Image (cartoon, rainbow, N blue to C red; front, side, top):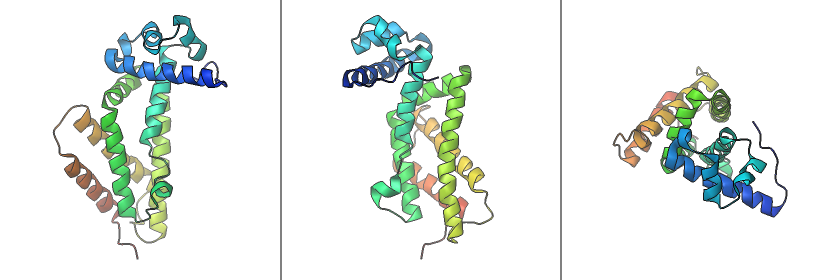
Length: 204
């Protein structure tokens, strides 16, 4: 689903953003099933009917919250932002950014898992996002193979899905289910599994 309108004025953009921020507070506080649009408008400090100017209902504003969080967790343009080209360092930075974002958004990540089981549209968007994430990682793996740095027998996309799924599941176990694990040990172990799985050779 898409929002009813795309606000063009600065005021409209501020109102929509305030509603998304308020929705995040309400969803984290009350959960998905018990959250109400009236609570979101109250939290945002806007008239009860105003929320429907921007969103059709709870499902749509929840998706807007998810889009915002997931965009943050994709850590885009990591190479460009950091100037790092060494694949081991890039893997470490990507895992660290993802895990920190997951830890920050753990309550919402737990809700995303729940809603994906009961809302087909939300599940489809989650799958779409996961595919985009894996496709980007597959591009990196393919480039490493072309450079002679990674196991050429690996299927880049399948490998990207498997390794990304591993990191995501471990984040869920540690930050949602609260299985105790020191952060640095977690990052180091995931980095080692990534590099071992790729049979990553030293650059140069």
